[in-house]
Image 1 (cartoon, rainbow, N blue to C red):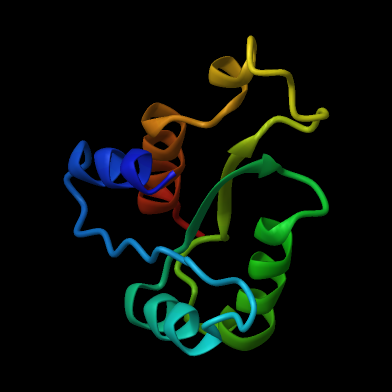
Image 2 (spheres, rainbow, N blue to C red):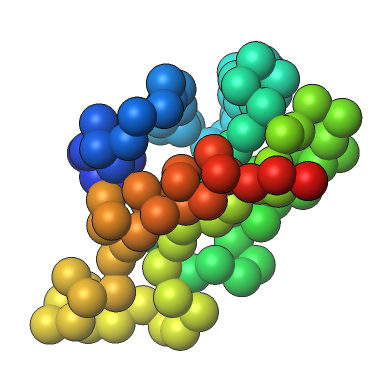
Length: 112
């Protein structure tokens, strides 16, 4: 997903900070929260389904510890809420740069 995230970041006019969470345990909470506090925005981009996954946990973490710094709600660009398909349909299931770009634009254009 890193390649897709970087591609989406390149396709927008915003100054984007991409964090690649290569290790999930232990989770680098400090880096995540520092980035959100600095930028005021967050798009979580991952290939797993949207519901009950790491993205939801990251969103909850950000809301618990950096809600007062957010300029827009946390947005998730993820796989669909279905079982991960076989390799024949994998490409259609996985989020791409376009889905990530849409989420980036949504948080950049958001106004409370």
